[in-house]
Image (cartoon, one colour):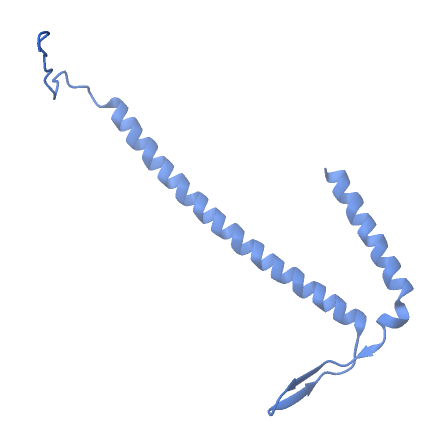
Length: 117
């Protein structure tokens, strides 16, 4: 499986290099971002190359994904810790019940039924 992952990443890297090298002129064009808030303000950015915007979007998406998985990992670890604690207490209770002596007193009396009834 590791071999397939390496091949996939290598192919992705090669296709990325091909894409950026073949579209170099377009990706280096300046792009000005604009945010128009009606009746308040209009904001403009400095001219940024399109390749920088693509890279920034990729990095932002990677960071958000990383944060999501770290929070998910933390939740699952805390749930696992809680389950282990509960399991240990239940095992302790089971062991204490196993070592408890059995009383010979029968709490229920047997009711004998008449054969004629």
